[in-house]
Image 1 (cartoon, rainbow, N blue to C red):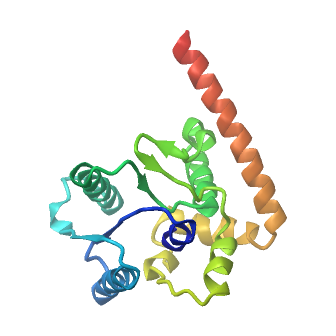
Image 2 (cartoon, one colour; image 1 turned 30 degrees about the vertical axis):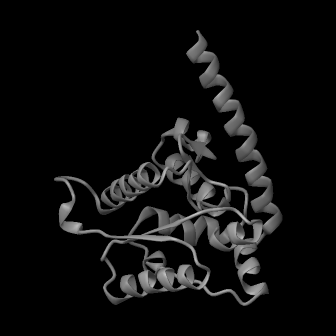
Length: 198
């Protein structure tokens, strides 16, 4: 997302959160973000979160999400910015579908991740993970991988490495599924609007 915005000539600032959950790896991510922003003269906002601030009964993922969007909202307000752009991509959209399908929450499964939710925008929802990697590799751009994504501790990772991993072997299948997801999402939104009008 950073490099895409650079190539498109958009004005933007970067927000990075160090959750402190992966020790030196988390610090390495922070250093990487600071360095790349400095090299391109992009303003970088960094927040070091404290896992001990989680609320009673709040999962690590829910805590991280709360911290993240509180931080983003504060930056929008203090810097008078319009949007928070997050880098959810097509793989995340598919994971979202299967996770909520498994939870039997059909409304959330078929509604999908929204391209825009208030001031939060997701411009990469239609981009496949393989396309992102190709984009980075073509000019030798560097990136970091979160090692926790390889663990099977979370349902999301099980879906990613199981179902999505199988689907990624056939890019046409991935694209067809995404087209179906988009049309279903539009229909679901139409029904929600009709219900609201009634």
